[in-house]
Amino acid sequence: MTSEERRAFGARVAGLREARGLTQKQLAAEIGRTASWLSQVERGIQPVNRLDVLRLLADGLGVSVQELRADAPAQELTDGPAVELPNDLDQARLVISGHAVPEVLLLDATEPGPTSLEEIQRAVDRVWELTHDNEFAELSALLGPLVPRIERAARTAPPSERGRAWGLLSRTYQALSSAFVRQGEADAAWVAADRAIRAAEQSGNTLDVFASVFRLSQAFVRLKHLDQAEHSATTALNALERHYAQAVAAPEALSVMGALHLALALIHARAGDRPRAREEMKRAREVAGRLGEDRNDFNLEFGPTNVEIQAVSIAVELGDAGEAIEVGIELDTSALSLERRARLKMDLGRAYAQRRQVGEALGSLLAAEELSPDLVHTHVAARDTIRELLLLAGRTAPPELKELADRADARP
Image (cartoon, rainbow, N blue to C red; front, side, top):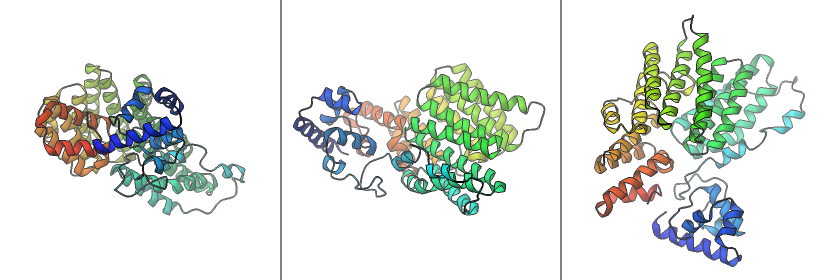
């Protein structure tokens, strides 16, 4: 949305509000926003791109979404590129807004229901492919019918297959939690992670429980509940390390332990606790050394390379831009997912911005956008960096930077 389009949209909101006889304060209170936020919308400063926020505003004004914004999708979800509404997980959010299959509660669970776990397995594999590729619109469309189906299968499959069905359900909710975190839907990520933990317990696969706790800690970080994030990750990690103190840990266990160390490193970095963040990175490197290879157990992508990608992110969080760049430019991420590769480029862009190297920062962000547009267009840190670069460059801002800011709605 360009600045002219934002101003036109804001004028439309103001006109509809006045037609209803509402002040900015009254409308803001009705939709659960601040009067300052609404004022910025009406002045064309604050863009409204998320479909859920657009719908909320339309409801407050007593009009349809399409009447408020003509290019909004007629359906709940758009899969076309023409409409700039970055949050593509509305359908998935509806899926977790209540019990997935209430009618199954009235069935006799001892009677097996028709199911094909092989087919469900392929669908869940596809869910994680889409999650790793940040293809959230397609992911949301797939999860709409899939989650109720797996929920039903977990309760009605033959007893010999129910453990596997519960495991597939846990993996699906873990993917959903991960996607919600990346789109800034932390409250929904919390719900999805909690459901993943419960399903994992039912599956009998203990390590799936701990992998789900990792997703929960990520949701707490995004919510800025760092104490809860630290508690969940620490209690899980302590239990794993006590259990494997006298035994050789399987690679899958090492992957989970290493991921939890990385989670704690980020938590401490966000809290500004440099020594503890550094200590957790050291422990993660030790676990990666024991593992000896890049793996993707529980879709955690833990291994030596991912540890160094996280080291770049932690260095940026701590303001150590030089270290982040030194580590990041040497990494070969070709074997990792598109999301991990794009995340590294994005963090390098943040590091260059900290050093006020506008050209290098822009190049890294454009490389990240080429790999994963959604990551750059919706990630809070990426958009903040783009705004910072525009302020740094001022009137000399290159056209490519201005165009990137427009695509990401990241104008100052």
